[in-house]
Amino acid sequence: MRRPGFKTIVLSGLFFLPLSASAAENLTDLLIQKGTITKEEAESVQKRSIASVVDKIALYGDFRLRQETQWFAGSGNGSKNRNRQRFRLRIGGDIQEGPIMVRLRLASGTGEHSSTNQSFGKLSSQKEIWIDRAYLEYTGISGTTLLGGRMANPFFMNLTGDLVWDDDYNPEGFAERYTMKLGEG
Image 1: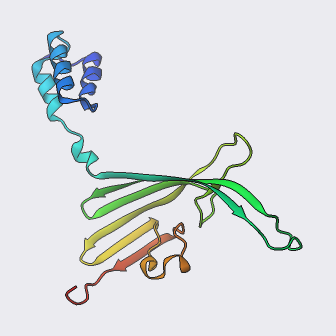
Image 2 (image 1 turned 90 degrees about the vertical axis):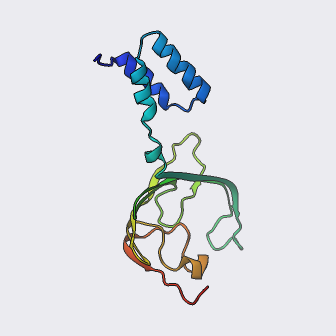
Image 3 (image 1 turned 45 degrees about the vertical axis):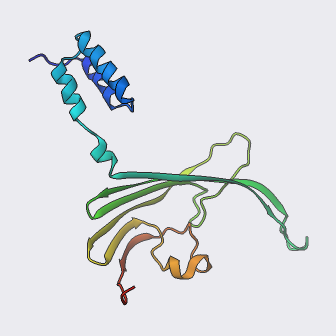
């Protein structure tokens, strides 16, 4: 049996690109005709799939850009009125493997614990990206969720809203959440 060379491996990698079905068939036929790969090698590569791995990953993110003006009453309090342009960038991903979910998110900001907003300033200065969340979530016990790491706030956000907890507050440590169905609804 012939061992695949470097060229064969590189060209076979093209099968993983998001090509249309007809383009992939044409490429496969061309590689076989030129003798770069055998028909068996082409079939072997087409049978391999990374879809099962990709299906476990969910990527998300958001970007916000705004003008912020703050007016302070009276000039004797030492505060100046402020105009600034601000942005927020968040990129994250969740990886599910059975009852375990790995949640990761990077965000802009200045390293504050309650804001991922960053002000534009100093022309051409670089902006920082921080680890906003990095935690495991285990749901293998009926009605119970175990959390550990730098997590999304587990403290009654749906009951208190922004009044008590800021949406950007992500505590570190361990937490447990228990959900119980009451009544028939």
